[in-house]
Amino acid sequence: MPRTPKPIPITNRPLAWSAEVLSTIGEPQRLQFGSSRVKRMSHAVLSTPHLKETLAWFRQTFGLLATDEFYKGDRSNVVGSFNRVDRGTEGVDHHVLNLYHGATPGLQHVSYEVQDIDDLFVGFNHLTRLNKYEHMRGVGYHVPGGQVFDYWLDPWGQMHEHWLTTRRFTATSPINLMPAPKEHDPTSRFAQTIMPDSTLCAHPWLAELGDSALGETLSDLSGVERSAYEYAWLPVGEAVTARALRDAELKPAGLWARRSRVSLRGAPLLMQELFLPAIGRA
Ligand SMILES: [Fe+2]
Image (cartoon, rainbow, N blue to C red; front, side):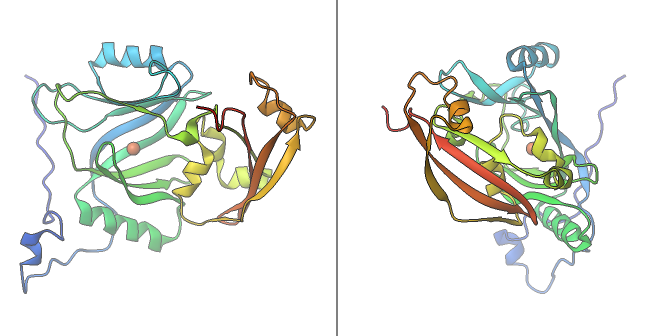
């Protein structure tokens, strides 16, 4: 007989700012400092150079359903896909698996559901006070799926997420197909980042971003300082301009470019972007 696991009980009150709790006078809930208490593993995010085939395998093998997908250019060119389990009319998480196209296959992060919103913030405070681990992103809110997140790195450079969901989906919830954020659009600009080995040693995840836009990732992180942009016209004879125009149909005499210096918790990077001819066209 298969055993149905019992849910782990939640010991805190729900949502500390709810009207019910705020109306409770004289009975304050005293939370203890410490780690967030993980209830379960909620999802994983993987990159793959074979997105279509990998998605097909996971869907055929586990019966996963697409919730949100992102495309570049043509709507059939899916570059990222959030997938949930099929439990019929029962509500499930927005995704148990997020697959996105990347140059190399790999694990981007694993996510763990914690007790409640108090527990997530208490865990954030705990890790911050420890001052021992690198904080990546958050506490924040993923709008498409309605999730609260907080990302940290372990000592080996692997990212993990504390997570809570606010929305549930059923087997008949419609798929949501969206254009990938402009930052991901390779037709608008050519980006290049230069960094010393010491920066890569301090932040090895920088080498595993795949197709993810570094500028967008950095904008969500704490401890990032960015200089003002410097602008310049780079003639086609420049090596970086030639690289940017390698696949372009139009071959102008040069490209406008901008660059800025970034300090990622003291580690230097130089980010430069060249604006491609597609900009300004309908
Ligand atoms: Fe996640």
